[in-house]
Image (cartoon, rainbow, N blue to C red; front, side):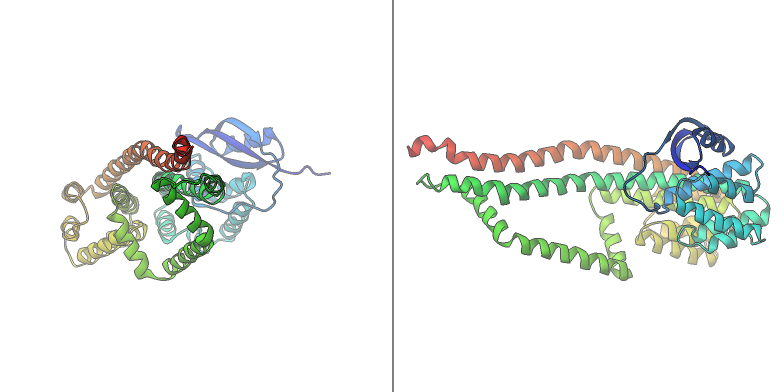
Length: 402
């Protein structure tokens, strides 16, 4: 009877010494370690996953594609062919969806289809930028270098995305929890106090009356308010998905938010310069590189600015001059691009700008988190503490009533 493959979680380092983690499918712990070694991973922890009560394969996400790109780059660097790399990674991958995707690509490559053409069949996972760079690598015979640059680009992009999510998620999560707790207190706890207060036979303090009025409003109309909020969110999300104009307006408004807007601006500049550096250094013509950078900027304001730059550059204008005309890029970025154009090292200058702005985003997100923690705790203390004080004020004044 054949043995069933199991899924193992692993942590370790790749050939470059960078920390990695992921999942791998193998028949045994020894085979899992051997597969990882063949992929260039020095694993320090490999542990078998416990079976979940819930079935179904996990979806492929951007992080999976980032890890896959690094694995291919590492294996190509070790002299393994692209077909062997795809087959080996597919064999050891823990996600059925990824195994199916990789086997499909490997079958195409085995049949003689260029890798870039095979990747284009899966636009949900491999965008035009990715496929264009792979095509450039195939044409120039530098697929290993291209995958290494792509892996670095994907890793930087994922790290930046993670930082932005962290900046947004923490305050939103705390506010949602505070809202839920306050709602529960107003609907279920405050009415119990109201019954006690009704027997006092004295006028309640104004603050207590105010809280009781809010509680009654929540009990009488809370369900309608909740339905209204849910309907608004649903309709807004639907309209946001369908309307380009609405998405563009939201992008413009988010850039004007205090602190968060500044983080988003720096993140957009980091994405623009990182994408342009990666594509330009890979041999993609500047016009095509600007097209890719516009799509990767992540914000309508910067997308439109980059498309304007592309138009002006196509007309013969220097890129740094076109960038100044948009009024969305800081002087430092414009000056470094100008230096790069004069020295013939635009890609290197763009890479340095990207590194600077990625570091600034990291620092700003960390600073925002440190600033928000005491502020949020203070707000929670005032809201929850205010409800408690409102409920106990009449009890404190019972002596005057008696």
